Amino acid sequence: MTKPFFEMPARLGWRKRYGEFIFYPDAPCVTFSLTPAFPGCGDKLGERGIVWDLWCLVESVRRPGAFSVINSECGYPPDAYIETNVSVSHPDDITVIWELDCKGLSPALDDAFVDLEGFIRLVFTRKAYETDVRGMLREVQNTARTPTPIADLAEAYDFEHLEKMYPDCRFVAEYRFEPTVHGGCDAEEFCALDAEADWPREPLFAPGTLLELGSVGDRLRINGRPSHDWIGRWFTRWEALVAYHQWMGCVSKRRALTSNGITTNMVADHNEFVPHPGQDDETCHRAGETFADVLRRCLSEGKTAPGVEVRYVR
Image 1 (cartoon, rainbow, N blue to C red):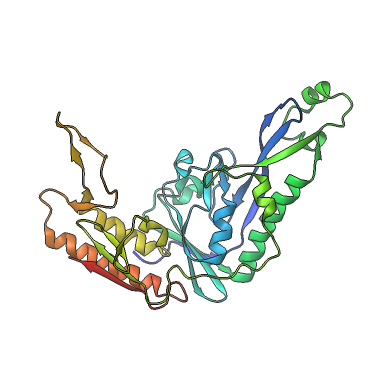
Image 2: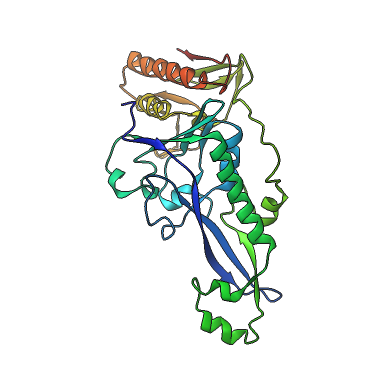
């Protein structure tokens, strides 16, 4: 299936949500995040700890790819049962497209989609998309830079309890941004970004790049050199994700067999794959070649990776 269950124009929305209240000795701090809002999303994202990953959103403005723009508040998507990234494509100079896998992103989607095998497609104008992402960045920066009276937190906390602790009512909170993603980030790092600066577009690969895929040994080479990059981040379309899973259905990671006969995941190269025992080699090769064809077509879209060549190596 390559057609979405529904396709519609979209904008990115958000709601600021306060989190943990921390009573530091010098100055208390309250964490906050931005709860996503978009066509087809569910109505319980805040309760499920699902947030916008602002770092990834900024990156998705600059280049296409698969991004964890919908994340867990702790920065690790599976903690919110999110198993798949959003496929982001830039088919032309004025459009950004999202394709969301209904199964892998079910915690963030409306209940009507959770049992479906397929995807939904959201179409943004580039101008509006960039405007919304910049708007989120300004929201984070303004919140982090501007102390807020504790009275403004009345909806999220027991105001009477806090008022008793701070009877002069002049208590203000300092803000940190959650989640801590990419090894850790806070409001200071977001405040260092320039929300008004140009975000130039970049291709995923330089013109003429050669990607080589294979089932055995180093399964990914870029211009002849082995790469340990996770190929999933280049799935700009849902069909690439599906073709990849069909290929992976024929192979498995090479595993080391311990002396007591227990298999482990301790491998020298996590990108080494071999056919499943008893799996027909020709079937594996055909699935790999199909995946390479789909990936080539997706990377050739617009300015994603001009002149890229994708080969499946038997």
